Length: 328
Ligand SMILES: [Mn+2]
Image: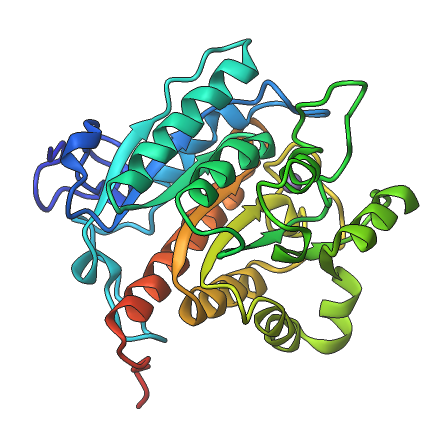
């Protein structure tokens, strides 16, 4: 369903992702390449709330323009012309009942996967990684899916404040429950003062690999992503989990657990593009955008562009064409 008049400016009309058509009925996803859906919940945060308002703000953080179009000058592709991209609305979350919200998110992502469509989930707090990665992994052969997590925190606690289901624990439970193998989880951008040695020891024992922020500073994002690609070489599909707090608070202040000393937006965009060019995208989430703490829309804009980079690279990867940058 088109909810916007043709040619209206970005700030006008209804707010689907980049003015993509709205398709709420999963039965109508046949032939759709990518469905963007919101998971507007923040029941499981440990610090500042507000990510329930994230999906709406990310949808409207466009760069101007009218109908859905985006020419990627480094790749030579317009994802909205190469792919069928729709906005699938939001999962029917229950305010105050995070576990019910998880069930709704999982069911919705499963129905998207069952249509042969790639889900792109806009969070929401990072606890949604459990239902949406579990949904995507359940539709692929065992160990087919590699998860690359951009994050300042590892989110591998057994519990936070005694609570099992938290935005600080999804990756621990995904591995311990056997949803993904430890060797299939690669974390990029870790910094700050948590995890503690016990969480790192669990990760070593489980085969989880990680790249600290200091490695990005010392060797550059390009070299780090080359190592990540080696680490996921034998996986057939990619899930991108992007916590916006992987960015420095100077680039993304609107988030619940900010940590100084992080990636620049351009490093993250480059990293996401390179990964999605190299490996078929099976799913993606962009989480932890908290608009009440945002300034000048920086965090929502960064999240929106992260999705655009992944969509552009996925379009080129799927076409089998080579990147055709707009050189002089
Ligand atoms: Mn996180």
